[in-house]
Image (cartoon, rainbow, N blue to C red; front, side, top):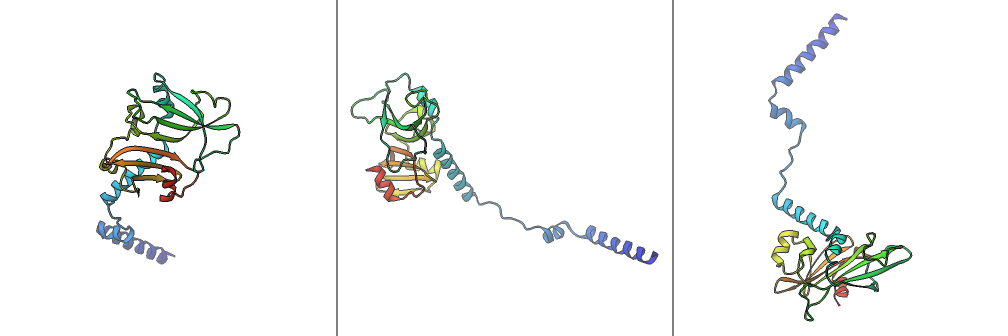
Length: 214
């Protein structure tokens, strides 16, 4: 019994001695794999893509924007939905269009429009906070749009903010994520107008963009 105990203690002593005599790098190299430092270009692409994803999820604060326009002449109308609109399966619902003339509006300018999906008892009220943003049709610069004030930006500025992961079409570019798309019409490499749409499909290609832009 004593011999067995001494043998175990001796082996334990040798094991401890071996661990203490190893150099730190030798011990770590046996147990851990060093991971490469993230590439800075990939990090930048990721951050820009994240910005675009966040933008597509919520391009504007709809209620805040509507409140900012109460001082202006705003018209509303029931809108006809399209084949590509996202449409929740909710009864007693309609599409509604808000028309927002700019402060220095004239006949040469197109009116900015917002299409929403409305339902329930407040669906005919401007103050309805349950409505769902479906589309932005923006043709003018407007500080009230906040981060969605994109008209006039250059293509280079867009790429600097949101990256180059976009689809090219004849007159512009389109960013998308899942069922949301931002279609930017360019003129002389600047944003002339844009449309943001919440779609009923995640298949976004040139054919669909062509249908939307007709």
